[in-house]
Image 1 (cartoon, rainbow, N blue to C red):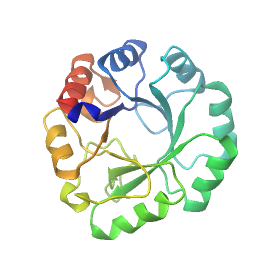
Image 2 (image 1 turned 60 degrees about the vertical axis):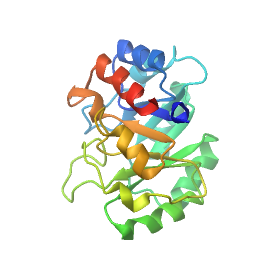
Image 3 (image 1 turned 135 degrees about the horizontal axis):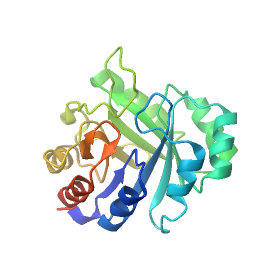
Image 4 (image 1 turned 30 degrees about the vertical axis):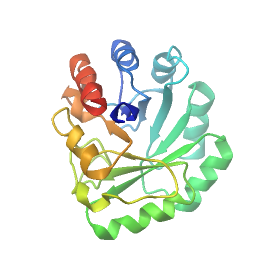
Amino acid sequence: MAHDIRVKICGLREPEHMRAAVAAGAGYVGLVFFARSPRHLSVQEAFELAVDVPPGVAKVALVVNATDAVLDDIVETVPLDMLQLHGSETAERVAEIRDRYRLPVMKAVGVSDEGDLAALAEYGRVADQLLVDAKPPKNAALPGGNGLAFDWRLIAGRRWPVPWMLAGGLTVENVAEAIRLTGARQVDVSSGVETAPGVKDIAMIEAFIRAAQA
């Protein structure tokens, strides 16, 4: 069954890393539009990366509390398959974005303890997918991509109304265990396939996808 696991490589910036992710079997590729992130892209850079991605690999734009003006610019320029909302967007805002752009929306929800799980059910009513991520530390500059994991047993065996993806601190070394503990069918990695913040590594991308699907 494990080869059914879909992998998202997020925060891609270089054409050769994009090609490597696609060739290795990534199901999703993520483009980050968040100025404070070392993985941030301009709309034009994202267009150039996305335009050659073959059909069947979902191109995902990651945004953080983006305005309609910012989203208009991204959606009009970049060929996308999905929007990933990684800020403090309300359920109402998620529904509004979904209606406005007619694109599937994935909402990231940070989890650190049992109390965070209610939000997953709430967003699961309005989003097309959920990204179950580790909650960033209180004073973190980035809402994700911090290389942190949470206690995976918190979500073991739980189900939500929509498909979900596991993120947060996943690496080549721990992804198989994370899948085993949570039952995740989809996993998302960014810093776990980098040699430095924002610097992806082709061998690590390939090894991660192999480990997830092994």
